[in-house]
Structure formats: C-alpha cells, structure tokens
Length: 212
Image (cartoon, rainbow, N blue to C red; front, side):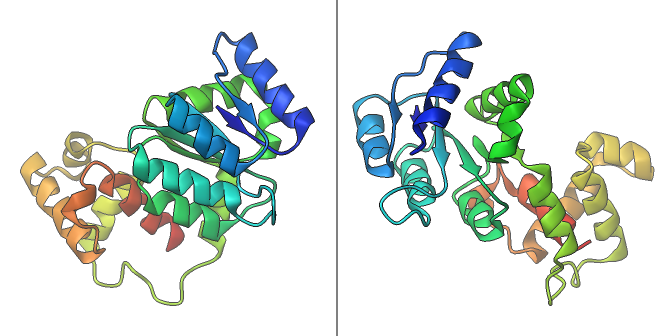
C-alpha cells in the first residue's frame, strides 16, 4: 500500500512497483485513508510519506507507528523530503525489524529503491545513508558508550560492521562464548532490554555510530 499526498508521486510509485511485478493493493492520499485501507487488507509493505494532510507535519509517521503497533509483522517504509532525525529515531523505537526510512531522492535509483522496499517487506532494516551521516556528525552531549570497557567497545565496533559473534571471535582470537558475554554486557550498559532481543544488535550498532 502507498500513502502519498502528491498524485504524481503516488502514481509514479504505483507504476514502479507494478513494473517490478508487485501488486499495489491501495494507493491513498492521506494517513487516515491508509489506516482504514490496512484495516481492510493487511499488505506485506506500507510505503508512507512522513508529512501528510491535513497539517503536513508528521501524520504519516504517526500512522506508521500506530500500524506497527497494531500489526507487528507489517513492513513499513517511510519516505521523507529531508533528513528528520527525530522522525527516524521515533520510527525505530517501534522496532527495527521490517522498518525503512529513505529520502525521496532515493526513488530516482529505481532498481535500488525497489530492492530496499523488498528488504523491508522481508523483515530487514533500511536506513538512508544521509540519516546515518547526520547521526555521525551530531554527537550526543553525553557519550552513551562511556560505561563500556575497551574490549566491549572493540566488540561493539565489529558488531557495527555487521560481523557475527563467530566472526568477531575469530578476529579477536577469543571464544565465541566470550564474545556473547561481551555483547550481552553491551546490551545491559546501553539499556537495551531483552524485550527487543531480535533488534538489540541493530540498535547497539546505531548507538555506536551516533557516538563516533
């Protein structure tokens, strides 16, 4: 499903997905219409603009978060005209599995955009590189990594590179069990509770990137 107030972009997105063999079950112009449409037929993926009628503030984002709460398995790809760190952070607090946040400029690279959409629908996480850049250049006043030991920082840096526990163990010449203990300690010190166990690795990596 697509929720975009611009008719041209809405029709363009519908055409792109159809061209790559995907069915667009609904294409609507407001967040309210989107919520009603999802209530009728839950899709694999929702593509929604952050700012939508009537106020053009964050109606799309609010709808995306509500839909994730009501339909935990729903893939949500949020589009934005500009980098909005607060919007990206709020979206990811709703869970990182099956979540995407991209700038609208990325749609121009059609094949990659569709690939990103597929990844989100399959449960992956896709964050726009410009958002990551913003997180890197705007350091937090308080370093959340301050409580980590040097070894835990080293492990977290490798986690942020996308390495598995097994690969980290080989790199640091330690046992996989030792790496698992360090990773668990990192989760605790970063206050990433066990209720988000499937997503803590991504959240820990993002925390590391923000603090660089």
